[in-house]
Picture 1 (cartoon, rainbow, N blue to C red):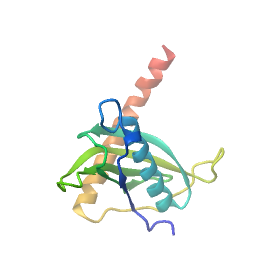
Picture 2 (cartoon, rainbow, N blue to C red):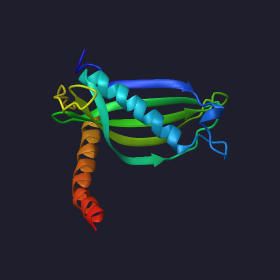
Picture 3 (cartoon, rainbow, N blue to C red):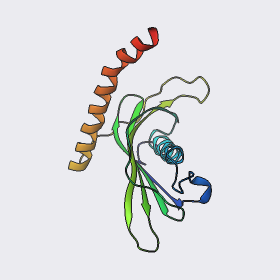
Length: 161
């Protein structure tokens, strides 16, 4: 039901096929997981097909190793008319020691569409923060949005040059 599922969590083991030549999960795989969890959260909130519009502030903070229990959490932190900003984190837990670490973090923006092929943006249920943590996360999303808008003319200018 749209407007009710604000958070999604995936759990699985990091596998040998996920790693680079150094034996750690490569950044592209972590980005795939971020996108999948973000998509599931955005669709769960909006009830519509969604596309990734942007990824901001991505940080690779700690390695993920083969056999780590990976948790990918996506949480809605701001809604626009048709857009949803999500905080998405990847955590890794060593199953032997129980040590858990934040491996990757970012803010993603998804846009809801009225249909998958050639769709137009469609409204999403509004969300308002209540808890202090949610207010801070929404403020962070707004700052990232402002920075993105400020960069837009610069990106366009470099394409025209």
